[in-house]
Length: 120
Image (tube, rainbow, N blue to C red; front, side):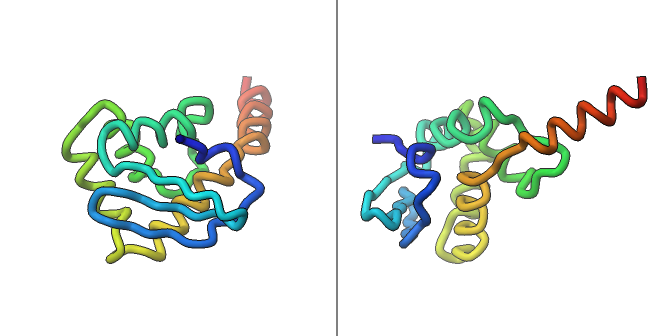
């Protein structure tokens, strides 16, 4: 079951990063397992970036780029994400997942549109 965007009001209680999976337990004790492969990364891309593509103010641009290509089974991008989302990089992986789950570009889009309208 893919629920990463369903429980945005819930905090991540535990994160377990293995060579093949990302296991997230939320504070409501629901567990989500995401495979670290093209299909799993495609699900993350669809949930996080399909409706809200990368924006100029975003952090983690390299990882967003890799999600885009990994969703299309690009092996280099899959490998990059597997390295980034590993226990060796646990703190940054947790920050990235938390950031992507909470990411809302509504204000930035309005500001960007306002600035572009002023220039024209």
